[in-house]
Length: 200
Image (cartoon, rainbow, N blue to C red; front, side, top):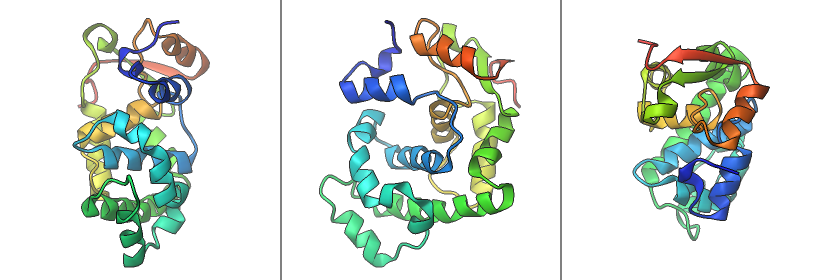
């Protein structure tokens, strides 16, 4: 069974790749978890995020955005003092801020998932060329989504970070063609084929 090469460093990464990465996601709590792990990842690596995932869940009430939006200075101190936690006050502040922005989007669109999937009209995008030349770190779609999220007050969600989230939650299928998950996901969910970077 072949897999994307990036996940082969340890069992937790393989499990994440096999069970979660790239699967179309429509659960808002999970969307928030993925999105905020991307925030914590900025300047670091994804393997570290997967290894620290249970610490993040402990610190952030299992990513229940309603609770996080009400965090106080006492909560921030608690998080910073948690053993194994990334000691970045700015990132923790960003997660709390983003929880509030996330709730605002839900109030406007019903769910965050409805908001996000509207950018791809509810379909997983298969970009021509990504499987041959390798996927980019950002593209036209991630530029558009990032700009809109920033306009709505989100922090630490530049185009590169947003592109990674779009891959993770299945808006973009960037599994390699020879990976067993590529055809499995493409065969089970609505897809649309697009020319690389054709959004602008």
